[in-house]
View 1: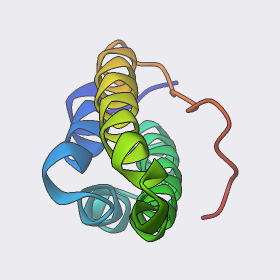
View 2: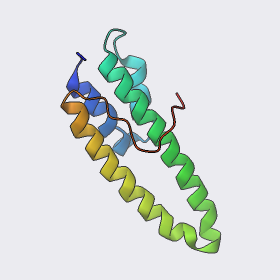
View 3: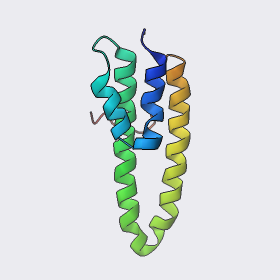
View 4: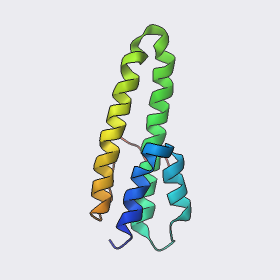
Amino acid sequence: MEGDTTLAALAHASALVASFFGPLLFLILADDDDELVKRNAKNALNFQIVVFVALVISGLLTVVLIGLLLIPLIAVIDLVLVLIATVKANDGEVYQYPYTPDII
């Protein structure tokens, strides 16, 4: 698959700074013929939506103290998977996050 590997990698890495807004921006601004960037941005956006939902649930669970353990765990998982996805996208691959449904 041909495409701009730098933009595909940035679609994933932008999630570390801008949550789901970064991948959404790359999805909107990607060229119509650049399928690599579009697919990577969609995958990153889907994952960030799942992370957001998990953080909201963890925030609600802080009432019973379980959320205090889950929030840092979710943050570490997010960081590790985004870094893996960034490297894979930079190599020209489309990275599919594990256990992430196709929401978008």
